[in-house]
Length: 96
Image (cartoon, rainbow, N blue to C red; front, side, top):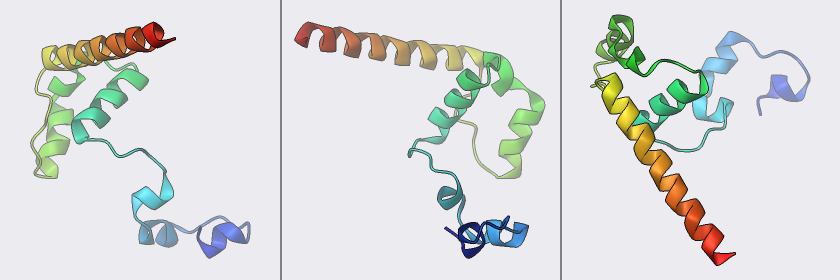
C-alpha cells in the first residue's frame, strides 16, 4: 500500500500512476483474449462489440492485433468454455 493509503488520505493521481496497475487492482493472470471475453460477459456486451470500429481502433492505437475478430468467434469461444465447464462439473459430480 502507498503511504497515503495507510494514513487514510486519498492518493493523488501522481501516486496512482507510479504503481503498476497490477498493484492497484488484484486480478488473476489471464490472456488478453480471456480478458475481452470476461468483459463481454460481465458487462453484457453484444458479441459483435469486437466488430465495432471504435473497439478495433483502440487496438490499432496500441499497435496490437485484436485476438477476437468477429462476434461469431466470440460466441464460439464462450460456447467452448461452457462445454469445458460442463464436462468438469460432470467429472466432479461423478467423484462425489
